[in-house]
Image (cartoon, rainbow, N blue to C red):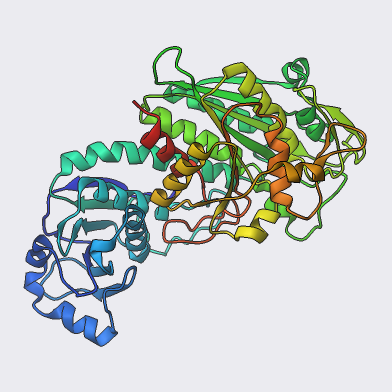
Length: 498
């Protein structure tokens, strides 16, 4: 990971150099180990807090340079607010906040994993470490001019003090796999589309073989044989060939039904013949954030040896407007045999997902399917960039996704589905049309997808507002957020591993 520190865990001890980070609450109290470490400073912290108006509110910081009585060059005090009210996602945020306050020139950082009430649990320490690594991420591989005099070390070292380093390391092995999965997803979303086109995306997905994932790449000849005409129709205007990648992790019992995750992978979306406005079109390199999440998730599950069988499937295309491009008014026959009238070639992601959903449902007969897609601008109008839209035909699956989102902070909001919306996508000339117009646009898109899942329990996550151009937070300063990797890993870990 670009900018990631070398991470370690140790017992509570006073560092001899570098930056020391400690936590306090709204009462400006400290835990016993922290008090012992800060004893040589006397009342320095309380005087500095009074002078700066620091009250220990959650996320607020107090920065002391060359603190008297300590050997470190800097002491950073992070507020937690009411420590007793902290939730799991808050510890991840605290790790991000802490790392964000560390100066670029710092080569060694010691973070004390203790709250005023006592030591953090090993799981909380691991969450702080996760937040730190998420905040450290940067995507700068195409910047050729770098400042040689910014004083930044080539490698930072981050040590987290804890009263149970061995347990923290064990839990961290899980968190690290997830962190790496998020990084994979972020890298894929941030890549420009001249570098990351369908064939290259498929090649990168195939590198998951290194962690034990079985990978099968279906080329256009195979897709034609499978009659995936809805997907192929989207890509027919591009010089780049379309691909479908099937990834399988077999960590559960033999013969046990797999879980299935499906991602939209439109590597660039011009809108096709229904071309988009020029302003902001460069963002359409991220129209494959759903597929990126699935690749990152498959890495996370395999790397932590998840005890479950999982299928990950991604449909990879480019939507371009050449002389062979699909036209409004065309009718295509999907792999399911259902016919689709193309009203708007910019409603292309649902066509890609339609064939992949059907293929996965019929081939693998999974316990459930979850698809992710930057599918509609309408979901951003509805939910902004704080929640992903959740649509589902199964209440239990929907409830578990909501719970996983609350735990990780990757929140989802359930939206309605119903036969009333089907009227908007009924066609005069085919079984359906690919858009129902502006009214309820994200709902009719999900209603369209539901026609291709048969009776399989299914959930659709519209991540148009959270997957790219994502909000800047304490743990994400990247354009591509990697949204969904932590959410779905938590869904699997809490409900489906035995």
